[in-house]
Image (cartoon, rainbow, N blue to C red; front, side, top):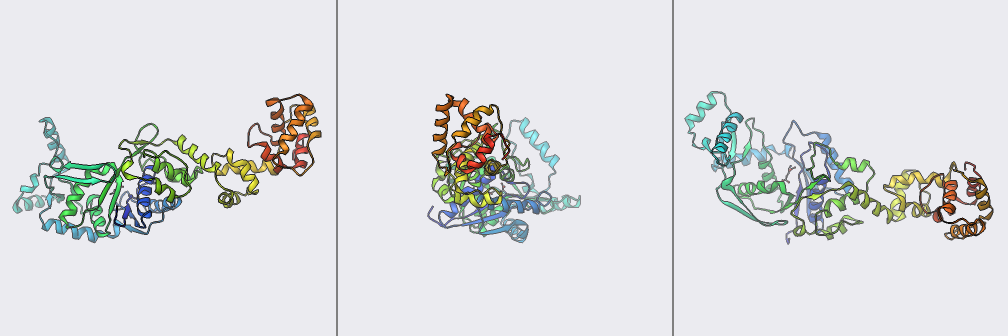
Length: 447
Ligand code: GLU
C-alpha cells in the first residue's frame, strides 16, 4: 500500500453499531492512521424510513469511545444531486435502463426459471422495450425502476485480504440502482461517493464481495479510478450466528454500559480471526502494528463474550495507576496507588473497584465465628507502621501461637477484617486498613 490511504467507514444509521461493525471501523482506522491517511465517516442514510438521527449520533459516540475520530463526516442524504448527475450520465451512456416489472411479475418469472433449471437472473426483457412500449406502460400508471446493464465479463481484482478474486458478471442480474420512487439503493451512492472522495481502499465485510464486481463496473462506466478492495471475514456470535444492527446484539453501547474497556473491545474485534493471538494492547497504534490484512482468516470468526471479559480483566490487572486514577476519582473510590495495586488483580470491570473501597475505609461488619481465636490474633498484631511484610509476619506468629494453618488460619482473619470470604491479597489490604480499624474488626466491632 504505497498510496496514502483515504478510507471510509460507511454504516447506515438504522441501528446501534455492534462488535462486527467495530471490526470494520477499526480495520479502516488502522489502515488510515498507520500511514497518516484520512478516515471518513460516511452515513449511508438514503433509506429515509429506517435512518434515524439518534443512531447517527450513537455511531459518532461509539466510534469516539473506541478512539476513532473521523477526519470528516459525510451524509448521503446531503448528496442526492451527485447521485442524480451520475444516474443521468449512466442513462446517456446506455448503462442505466428503465424497467417496469412489478415485484409479482419478477417473482413469477424467477419461479419459472428455477422450475426449468435456469439460474434466476433478470432476463433483460425491459431492454428490448421501444419508446412506444414504454409510453404504453407509463400510460397504465407504471413508473420505471432503473437497472445497470452489466457487461457479461468476469471482473477480477486483487483483494487486500482474499488475494485474487473474480466474479462472473454474466451470472448476475442487472442490479437495480434507482427505485420507482426515484430513491437510490445502496450501490450507486456508494460508488459515487467513493469516486468523489478519492477513496483509495474500500475495506469492508465479505458480504460485499459480489457488490464489488458490480461496483467496479459502475466505476469504470463513470470513468472513475478503481480503488483497492479488501473484504474481511465476518464475526458471528458464540453460537455461530451472524450479528445484526437491528437486534442491538453485542452493541458497542451495551458493551460500554457493561463497563468493558474500549481497548479490550478493540483488540478482540481486530485480532479475533487474524493471524495474531488475541492479546491485550495499550493503544490503537500498537494494534495497528499487529494488523496484516493479508493474514485475516477466510473463515468467519467467532466472537465470544467470555473471551472479551477475560481480555478485559487482563488489561485491568496490568493497568498503571495513572491511567486508572481519573476513573477511580469519578467513581469516588480513588484511595491512592497502593489501593489500586491491591485491588486491580481482582477486577473484571474497573467499576468493581468501588466495591473494595469500603473494605478499606469502612465500615465493615466483621464476620466472627471464633471470637477467642481472633482475640489471640489481635494480641499478636504488630505496631505500625505496616508494610508489605506485616501480614506474613503477623500470620506466622498467629500460626505459631495457635497451631492453625491454611484455611483455618486465614479465613477467619479475612472474614473479620473484610466481612467477606474472598477478595484482594490481605498482605496488600492490611496496610491500607491500618492497625486501629483492624483491631476493632478483630474484636467484632463494625469499623
Ligand atoms: N452501508 C453499507 C453497509 O453498511 C456500506 C458498505 C460499504 O462499505 O460499501 O453495509
